[in-house]
Image 1 (tube, rainbow, N blue to C red):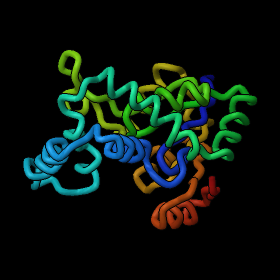
Image 2: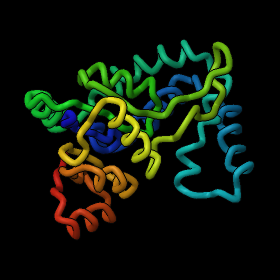
Image 3: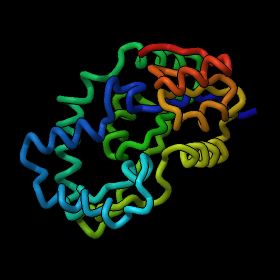
Length: 216
């Protein structure tokens, strides 16, 4: 029999109110680290993919990071994490993680946020594993696109299945926490799904399926 895991979405689940990437972008704009050229690349991505307009396209758009020095971005991410993200970390969410750890459960962070931000959260929470969005690099700079599968919606499910196989996780006995209807593919994969700070759609889905609803 495999290990039991507690799988946590991050944005608006553990980090209250918004996404870590949004907080980081605002932080960089305030510091003058992002400019009109960066915004132009971001908007240009939509023009090039106008036939795909939708929520998933917006989440895939990483053109704003193109040509940014990777080491410098990571350094700024550490400062932003300390100053802007940690204050938004839910105390109750942290408590849930500690409860699972006390029971010997693996703690997994599963997020569409940028991997260097999720890594900092993983270290803070002493999580066992993480899945996040990886940005491609071109030498020392970021390439402005995603590397590999983008963990959002059904892709989150595929990533989790692969992790479970690699780490011998017993998904039917495991727990998952998510806030958005895009987390349904994850929530329905485990035996113990929990809707956290749910959107209207997820709240209705949780109520119809008898899933617990909590507010972090």
